[in-house]
Image 1 (cartoon, rainbow, N blue to C red):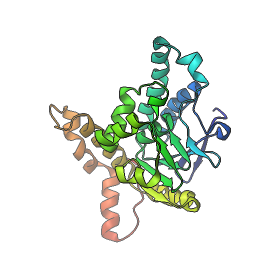
Image 2: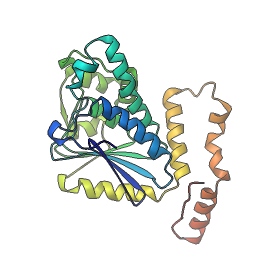
Image 3: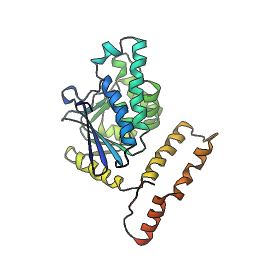
Image 4: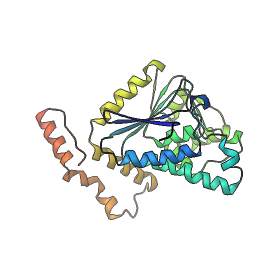
Length: 262
């Protein structure tokens, strides 16, 4: 485990913290690889029901890719392709986690940090948060993985504005275009996110997992053409699960269900 990315498990929730506050929690090459490893670890940990991502300190969720890496890892096309394998691999791994994911955002959430946040399921932000992907200011492009997450979330119009203007937008504008889920006061961010994550951790893991899979399938194949047999059957698999029987019994008995994820 890197000191730059911290992990804490508590009450069914995994808290992953970008821990470079002096660099506005910029993520270096090793950090993207570590996020891939963490995604595999948390994805297979049945004790974890929800994953929350946050930035250390007072200034930022994450300023994105560490610019110090650019000379070593991104100063030509061949190196940039290798860097993208780590970066895209991390975003894909987080996006495909079989558990709900939440970004708890304050301050700056820009560049690769903003792209990372779009891969999570829910984004709770403070009123003073700022968002943008100012690639045009650096002469960069984002890859297909990042572009697909962004466009799926906000549409081509808002994505074009963010990418082509290079501007940063405030929390209310981010909420209006669908980039974020909820805006709260700075003093409420931790408690609001903890409450939400705690409620979600009590829900049915199989339902959460398969909901995410169904959503990814729909995004990749909006017309639902030529679905595989497994994709066709997926909406019905939970009806044979212990969790479904528990949820139905608990509803009839007017008690809280105790889901086991099977």
